Image (spheres, each protein chain N blue to C red):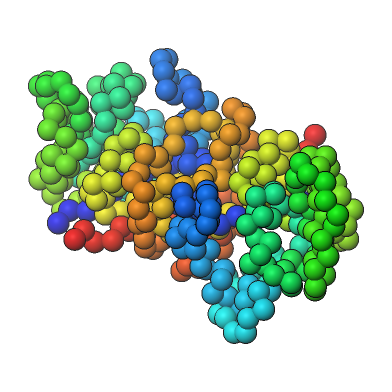
Length: 207
Length: 207
């Protein structure tokens, strides 16, 4: 069975972004701050079409994440806010399944990225991604609500939390609206770097 | 200047306890779950009057924390819920300054613990703890609201977050009700153990 994984960068409070990211024009200092560790590195820059960038521990993790992702699942708001900046050659280079309420033809981009629009819900989107990812991972890109739903429905196998050493004060929580029940995780990986602390967790095997 | 520090154990979501801890009888599965790493160890057991307990990485951190604490500051709800279980020989063995709205004579217990009741606010309680802690730390014991207030008022120098690998689903957040402003932290310590991940942060020097 393909591995269903998410990688989310958060502030120490668990925010994936600050308040400004919640409405147009979505330009949020907090989001830029917590994701700067990724943007600075060669792996991310290569995917975004830029030369250069730092190497090292963080870069190696990013490269592994990209290499392992055979298909992506994301929410409609993430797609809407990314469609324009990602441009003609989006960084995914793999099928992307966008959860939406509105049917739409697949959007084929350069470099291997095709956006498929799925109206049957998250579980269905993940099933389609599993069928498309080959022997690689399904990567749940976000946003927070999609990750929460994947946790609630027991659809995630692996979660990587990248903790930036900053308090944003206010923002959108990664972990919210979860059911009132305890989920034990296997914290199988800790990778430290000056810019960010990477914690890798596995979820208990689905029943 | 004495160091003002807090050590808080949280779930991966940043909860210090689950929902049941918010009302009598305060018996909360989530709180017991996330603090079990401490309770299992020699350092904690010795303070609580029990023999035995595990040693190792987590125990060494606990011992250092106890050894460095020259005075404590806590909220009234934490005192109220702890007064009875702590008994005649509370684990602090140092002055404890309890923030309250109601004046009360100091409560002298065995083993070096005296509870002082402070009605002039958090900054005043911390000042009194600084005057009493000698060359050791002031430890902010909690609850969450006191830690939030200390962050907001720039009263904390050092924060240790002990992350238990568990999702509680619902609970009381450690990081909440903070002002909408970015605070950069120096994440100077990462200590990993199977039971919990310890992250040590320093706050920027007060202006």
